[in-house]
Image (cartoon, rainbow, N blue to C red; front, side, top):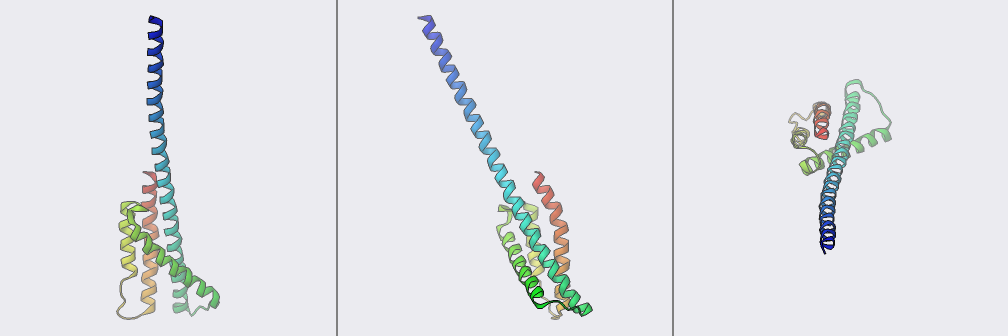
Length: 155
């Protein structure tokens, strides 16, 4: 009779140990999965933000060349740059609205500052001032967000 009791104790102890180990393993796997998905979402968001800032910057540089140097660009090329810049402005605004859902807290704050700078009214109605301000904003934003993204993605 003692052998049956020992056998039952061993079976029950093994089953309990296995269940606990499996539960811990599943919990760890799910935690890691969520962490990786969050990292992927942030990486994708930062990539889209940088692409958008690049398009704004490229369009602003072209417009400044037109104004300062009288540079001529192919109409279809200029329209395409303008379209991409417009989409870029929109994407930056969307990222600012999404905030900490897609980027870190410091980057979300910086995105709101970028949108505010883009929306700053120009009371003297000088296109050069508007474009120069957007170029400076986009250039500084790229510099700042590189640092914030690196810090955010490392954590």
